[in-house]
Length: 461
Ligand code: PFF
Ligand code: NA
Image (tube, rainbow, N blue to C red; front, side):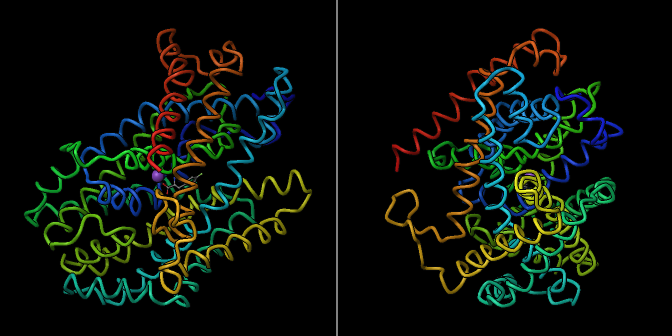
């Protein structure tokens, strides 16, 4: 239980380890796995990037996830207050709550464009259901996508709908039903991905896709690519913005933080790799460009659904499940800022959801316009590293590649250097060598790795 008297008891504990895994998986598995992983892998040359990404998951993401859950459980409150509570209890600087604040802001910024992409998925439910994909050529499928991007009003409608779905759940403050749904719908999404992988195996380019994903060619790996891999590891695991800290505050004391965190990391990674195995055979079989960018899944998966038996049905189901996965992630992005407004500003939940949701929705319009009217507008283009980046690209870059790793770095420093070692041994309940491995990782390896990647990229810029 938390260090504040009776704190967990009042907020209700997760009934089981499974409940925590479902909530954390709901947050982790989302557009990051199915939309972002394949396209950043394609843009960064495949195998070597995937290897670095997997390393980042295992050697940085997992230990940080454990640290976040641990801090949350120890603090027993919302992230900002958990950090304050631990700091007060251990007589540390109160400034540590700013780690939570950084996360609140990052989540808010991410949701603004996440919702726009969620809107693409909403749009494709209709496209698939109406049979428009059946038998179409790669060019025709590409045209459907570029028509969507070129139409700000349609994008706005779907963005609004997606944001509305997220706000609805956050305003009501009940998510238990949704978490139970995760246990049925996530496996369904997994099965549908497997179906597409099965179809992709028949295209004849499956071997090439496997080689692309798993045969590292280090000549294709850039310094910027390493930063993207690191940033994406944080993004996909929902780390660096205190989401896992919030969930950790509900985790009962007798449940292993290590085992539950490993489970979440494995599920998230499996979904991402399956998405890669589904998409790249289609890319190669149709002579498409792996580095096509954010539109990659919307230009490839519809081709598969257009060609396979019962494709309209599978396609409709797939995009519905993708919306569901994005929805549960979107909720975890909005929740922290709403909770913060409630706690700090004394606003009620409905008002804070409407307020934060509206501002986030409005910011999303800048991302929508980046796809069409403002597609040539690169506000920070004079900085080498940011050349040609639209507002949408910049939001993605700063949140995923800067704010989340920075948040993770601070979590690692807090756990590794500030909190008492005894408290952590207590929370993690690992064997002595395993604890030492984790401790050395958060104390030295993570800060050095994240710091080095940052410095190299700054020099490069
Ligand atoms: N992990 C989510 C995904 O992969 O789609 C995105 C995300 C959710 C990032 C929540 C960060 C976060 F706090
Ligand atoms: Na993810």
